Amino acid sequence: MTNSPLSSNQKIQIAGAAILLLCVFKLPIGFYTIVRVVTTIISAYFAYEYYRQQKKELALTFLIVVVLFQPFFKLTLGRDVWLFLDIAVAALLLFLAFKESKCYRLLKQKYNELRERY
Image (cartoon, rainbow, N blue to C red; front, side, top):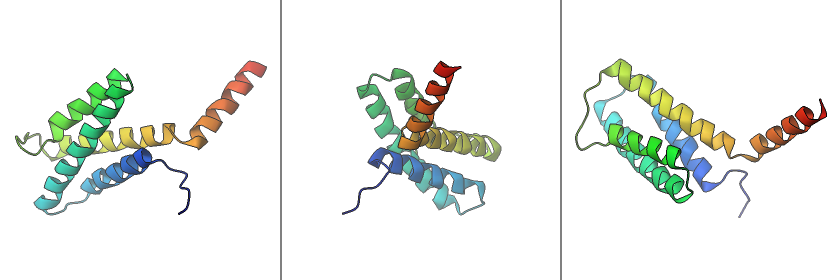
């Protein structure tokens, strides 16, 4: 068993972002349905996680994503709007995955040290 530099949540965020970014290609309609289901599940999980961590703004953000992507009552928004939403949610997931990484914390620490010095 190897130690991964990524947490389980980071892996979920990166996988979710990758699936959403595949939506830039024209794919069969069934793929987009799978993306909606997967994004809904991932977003519901993170809405709960962030609510549990008292990060209510992020919890609300992911709750909105759940409502937008849920596959039961489909919203007809047009390809351009969906493409924007797919990319925006993917960017959010990647930002959060990177923000929680050791690399980000190290860069932030070094940045703060430099700010204090000058």
